[in-house]
Length: 209
Image 1 (cartoon, helix red, strand yellow):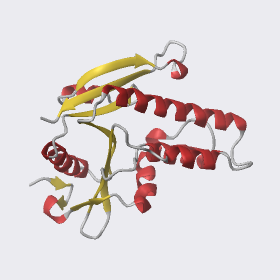
Image 2: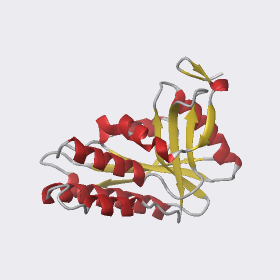
Image 3: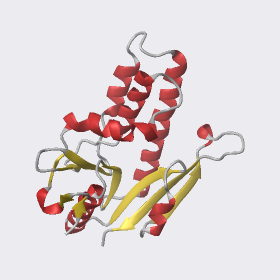
Image 4: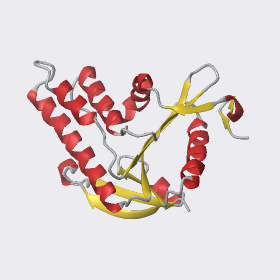
């Protein structure tokens, strides 16, 4: 029996993701994903946009809940051709008069361009039998693995061929190669490079068959 820390797997349930829990996911990733520029309001805006950019309009949005309803983990997937509406949310938020300076808007636009480009590159490598892992977040030790193991089996049973994902040098990208994923693309993202430091991106895939 797998466990989520002190929570046994047979006491948790997998549900469709409730968008009311989006702020909890943003709280979890805020320390890692908030930009260096701007105040807390701007940083929160950017982090929430990044989370929203990984949630597509489909049925592949899941959460793992404890018996009392506490959100333990969440995972989001996308098929080729699925639509994400985060761009509308971003445009409306960034366009509020006086909310952010022009310099901060430029920072936010740069992050949006990067995320959209990497999604586009990943989808270009996929076909209709592949699916992309967009975001995977655990809020309690061990719970992410419980959710992912169950969803992995579901994807296999549905006949998906490969699981794709993209990441970059700011993340533990080496983990994927050590866990059965194949590196299919490695690139330099020049807008994020700094003197003496390359900013690299990586696209991985793993067979579901």
